[in-house]
Length: 577
Image (cartoon, rainbow, N blue to C red; front, side, top):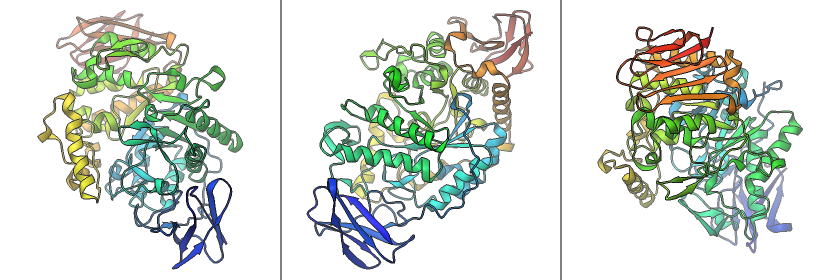
């Protein structure tokens, strides 16, 4: 027997269509309808009908094998044979995270295809794999941030069992797995939630339309919907944590904010299961309350991305100053981000034309993820250019050294480790012509602030835009890609073998720099990272006598006493004698 349930508080009647028949559902408390049917098991297609309307997918559909407009399919989550019973994720404080997009990480673009490259990540030294959203979205390919069936893995990537097999394979190799989830909005195509209940609110607006209803009438069940979704991924798919997309677009005026509720429920699941589960936020607010413990008045999330560090590092390495990069560009900003995380911590932002952020106080560095690249910072460029297209090999090595020796949890974006030449532009495959046209035109308008020529922007709907984004794994063995891969491997090995590099105490980070001469040093315990961004060789003072651990240019760099001799666009990593 299978019990079908759906929340439809405004419906006068409801029915479930399954196996060619329509069965009435019984009303229950709080707007829930249910029907218990004999002879229906895993693999049965079904849909819900309210007030005699069209059959619609289940808002909590576990699988949409025919896409967002097709019927839902039942799944037996107990049928998969897991082999990770003794698995425990490493602490986030010691992590090296690798963000990947299932559709472009392998030529197959599937869960099974991703398994074929996991050994590469193990050899690199990665501890945590972060999947960009895999929830069912419109079309065959896309970034996944316009998902509409939040409980169902995207059918083009594989079956639910295929996603479980990917997670299981990661755990077999010692890799923890994080899942990117989107709770600030849902995609436009195939979004039938409002036909069932008050999932959205007109009290707030987001760049994508109405906000998710978290604080108005009916919000209890909407919050339950999202929290149950998060717990499902952690429980039924064995994910080790979640990354929450753009939480600054989650609006909630409740006394207990949705993020606090979610963090608490995930912590409770972790306590019950004995697993290390984490929740990481992406936020544009520069608000440390997100990651402060609940006991100290925070929301209790485990970590958040550090965009200020990225922007400070990117602008120093590229010289770009357009758009939101206008607020950055100096070594002073980079130094502040390395020691205080937020460059804008109550400081006036010219880009925003207002005061932005607040100081982090005594929070440790491992509450923040640091990176040179991620899907947004690459994909939201006109052509999806990676850092390898924007800077010299020497500056790429400098960027990698600062990320992997920083006091933050370092994160790499797929292919970054070997300076992949393939772009990662925004791509989608919406079937609705008006929506597809709107997405294409919208991308052109988005880039006006950066001064990019609209003619240079690839059409997101062009299949070639997606195909060009697939990683070319043949590059790994070729120059200069092999050289960059080895550089990343050595940096990660250094981080793993040097306790001071995993020390999150920001007060222990010492940074010296000379803006005019374009050099900077960062000292962390016995390790000094010394870099020269000038066009000529120069001498850079270091804090103590040291020996060379890693050099980006053996021919041009050396150390003598408390002086480092660095060639142009080069970096030395030194260790105290």
